[in-house]
Image (cartoon, rainbow, N blue to C red; front, side, top):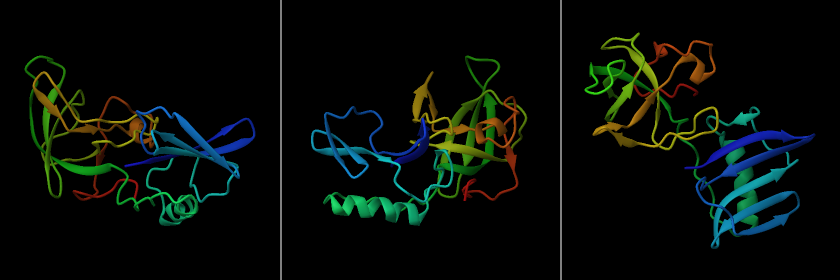
Length: 193
C-alpha cells in the first residue's frame, strides 16, 4: 500500500509518494526535481518538486488514477526501481450493519459487526444514528484518513477494531461529526470511485 499527497510549500508544488510511512530515510538521491528516499537500500518514498503529475487535488489522492501511477512508474523505471501496482480502491468501502451490541466497558459506545462483499468485520463506535441493515462508509486496514493519518487494525479491551465508521465530516462531505454517514451505495462499493 502507498499514499500520494500534493501540497504547496511557498509557491512550490510538492507531490509526495509515501510507501513506508513509519520509516525514516537514511539515504537520499535527487535527480531533476525528484528526490528518492531510501531506508537501507529500500525505497520508502519519493518527493516530486514542481513536476507535472496528474494529481486531482491538494491533499490526499483518495484513489490515484492509472495515469498518475503510470507517470510515477516512468520515474521508477528510469531509476531501475520496482513499479507501483494500480490502486483498486480508496479504502473507504461500504459495509452493511449486521449486528449492534452494547460495549461491555464504555456505555456510550457499541460493538458493531459489519458485512462486506467477502468479509465480516468488527469495530467499536460512538455513533448511534444507524440500525441493522443500514449501509455505512468505513475505512479499512492501512487506509489513509483524509487528514493524512492512517487507520490500523487493533484490539482494544479484547474487541477487534477492524474498520472505522465515518461521519460526513470524516468524508469531507458535510460538517456533521456526531453521526455516522448512512449511504444508499451497495455493499462493497468504493465511496470515492
